[in-house]
Image 1 (tube, helix red, strand yellow):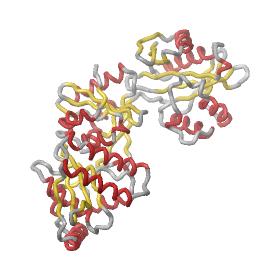
Image 2 (cartoon, one colour; image 1 turned 180 degrees about the vertical axis):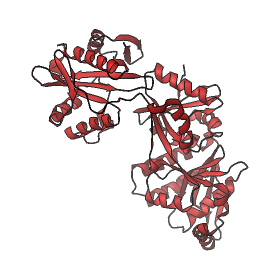
Image 3 (spheres, rainbow, N blue to C red; image 1 turned 120 degrees about the horizontal axis):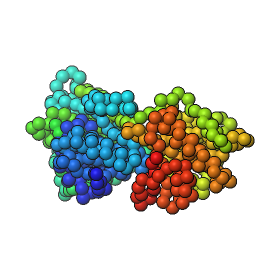
Image 4 (cartoon, one colour; image 1 turned 90 degrees about the vertical axis):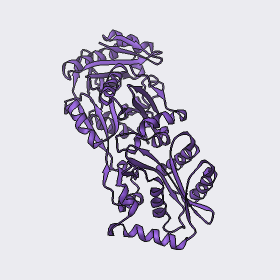
Length: 463
């Protein structure tokens, strides 16, 4: 089975030994982006048959894989599938460019869902066209460059070296003063720029800066990956008219290299100014990056009603909002539930939780049902089917408010969900509980589950 190592600074050169030959057009599969945004990606990596496999725990919530880089693409995909099965995790891939969708469609068919966000599509350009800027459509850029050169005849563009890093940090102090506003993404991008600058020595990046009268007024850092130059950083001071296009063009001249035919200027993160600027440079195409999930989905249009001897499991209604809210937000009750709602719900309200479970069902991610006392109709708790996997497993979970613990309601609810998963959904039910949660262990065992394995945190069950 694959063994993953947490990605740290000391691994940059190893990662770059693969990414420099990347066959993909996405900026995310470059050492610089992986390193700059590792606080979001939370990466680990494994090597299989001279092939790099990257696993991310995106925002500490979603586990997904990047496309393998190296000699044995299909073999690595099989290893990822095996890893997902053996570790009971959903099979997900991120930053998959459109050219690879046919491969996944052929492999997984109707079990595949794929979607992309335009805000994070990369801009891909022809290197030679942006280097020469020939033609009417680039007249604006040429005019800006000519104006800059006329205004600052003593300006020089220089290759960035380690000895220039103090200048970069001084530049960034001034740049930050000019950009006191901005949202979360812009602030994170600035911090990640500092992070990359501090560690230029750890990997092979290309860098250059514009100097006017001895002062650094702009700089850029990029990286070669396959046949592309990926531009990680482009920053300039506002008061130097034309400095951005001049820096960009000068940087391309500095980085000119045989075999490099494309420029990737990364995405615009939905920023209108960046979108306008990057579009004006006439991209050859936008590289849409798909998030892919492979699972056997629920083929039901409405939540079921499951009737047992003492309990009924059914759709969560408007009338259940307040109960559902209390169930979700009771800290002591949810100590061993294994889910932190704060990661998904910014402002916890009864309506927010109600809408979340409706949305999850619509997306075929979760099936949440209220558990009621069959005699009184009073709500007792919740039963959940979630973590639908591509190999046909579905995880079962149950939680009740405390006064109904130990009365057999949970055991009966789990039995009903096991039967429903097997007979109605044609899926294989599994479950897990924290090792410290002895009550859940006994309940799941009484309901028919058998212990499969343990790790440091959980006990895993199957039928």
